[in-house]
Image (cartoon, rainbow over all chains, first blue to last red; front, side):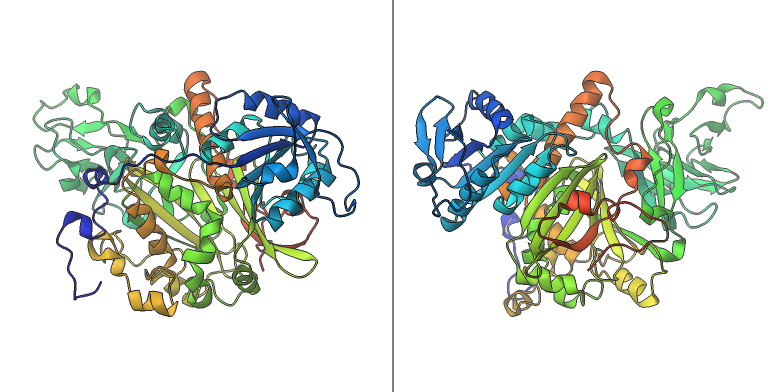
Length: 172
Length: 428
C-alpha cells in the first residue's frame, strides 16, 4: 500500500466490504439483454424452445428452422429461414442485425449445416454463440460434435430447464 | 443474475437453513490436523456453518468436536484444561469427553448420576490425510469417509493449507469454476510462480485469450472444460471438476503437483479456503513444499500464528501499482490466492446476484447454481441424498490435455478425469 495515501473513510479502502457499506452502492435499474436469439436445431429442441418462449422474457426472440438448411457451402450462403414460435417467418440475417447472443438448442438430431452457417454468420458479426445440447450424454455425441465448433460456450445437460436457467441468468 | 430468493437459499448455511442442511450431508474439512499436533494439546476454537465449537485431542489421541460452551454457565471451553482424557472447564471443573459427554461435575456428590444427563452437542472428528473432517448431519445418515485423492495419497505426496476468506462461501467457490478469469487475473503467475511456470500448456494459455467453454454433467457435479487453440489440428483443453457442494480442482501444468480447494462456510459472511497440492505418484520435493509454505501456487502467506492472509482488506491486499504497470501481476496483488480473494471479498460479504450482468461464458457458474438449487430442494422436499456424498464421486482428477479438434473431452478424457492409482495426472 502506498505510504503517500492513508485511507481514512470507511469507503476509501478495501475494508469497505461490510453489509453497512454495501447499502451505499449505486442502486440503478439494470437493463435486460436486448438481443438474445434462441434457435432450435431439431424437432426435439423446437418443442423445448416453443415451451420456453411462453414464459415472460425481455427482448429474447425464439425460433425454429423453417426447413432443412441443406449442404454446407451452398454458394457460401448465410440464408437460413427461421420460423418464430408465434409462426412468423423470418431469416437469420435479419435476426442477427440487432442480436448480441445466439443460443442454439439441440437434442439428438441437430441440423449440423444450420449450426455451421449460424456459427459462421455470428463469428463474422462478432456475436456471441452458445449451444445447449439437451439429452443423455450417451445419446447426444453426434449432436455435440456438430454444434461444438460453432458455439463459444457449449453446455451438455440432461435437464431441459437449463435453457430457462441460462436465459434467466443472461437477463434475456 | 440470480433471483434474490435463490441467492438467499444458496448463501445461508446456518442451522435450519436448506443450504445448511445440504452441507450437513457431507464430511467437511473442520481443521488442519497440525492444529491439534499432539495428545492433550491446547484446544482450538472452530466455527462452521454458523455453529461455534471447540476441537481437542485427548490423552489417548482421540479427536473431539463439540459445543464451545460449558453446559453449566456458558463459559468458553477454549480456556479449558485438556487433561486426563477430557476437556475440563476451568470455571467450576466440569469435564467432558470427546463425545461431549460430561464425565465429572465436581460440585455433585460422589457417585451422583447427574453428569450422565449432561451432554454437549458434538460431531465426529476424523483424520483423513492432512485434515480433520467432521460430519454435522443426522448420525443415522452418516456417509463413508471422504476419498478425495489428495487426502488418500501417502503423506509425503500431499500438502494442505488454509486461509480465512472474508466473504460468503458461494462467491469464493464460484471462482473455482470460473475458468475465464485465469488468462487475466492470474496471467502473471503463469510466467513466474514456481508451482506453475515452465509448462508447455502455459504457452497455449497465453496465446489464446478467448477460450471456448464446455460444461458437462458428472455424477458428483460438473466438469468445466476450457479449450484453446493448440496446433493446427488440435485443441488444448483444461478441465476442472466440481464435486458438490464445494470441492474443485485446478487443471495441472506440466509435472507440477495437482491442486484444488474446498470452500467451507464459517458463517454467512466468512469461509475457510482449504487449499491442497499433491502428486499422485511421487513425493513432493522440498523445493515444492517450501514454495507452498511461502504462499506460492494456490496457497497464501498468512500472518504467523493465524490463518489470516498477510495481504488482507486492512492493508488493501498490499496492492503494488508498479507491479501492475510492469505486468508482473495483472491486478497488482501478489499470489493466486489473494488475487482471487481480494476481488471476491470486494464484492461484499454476500454479493447481490440480482445486480449481476452475466454472459454465456459464465455458463459453468450458472449451471452450478442450478445444480445446487435442485439438490437443496430435492433434499428439503423429498429427502434425496445429494450428489457428492458418495465417496465414488470424490475420485476425480482435473486434467490438461491436447486433443484432436473433433474429440469430446468428456469421452476422450474419461480415464484421465478419474483417480487411477499409480498413474500420474494427465497434463501438458
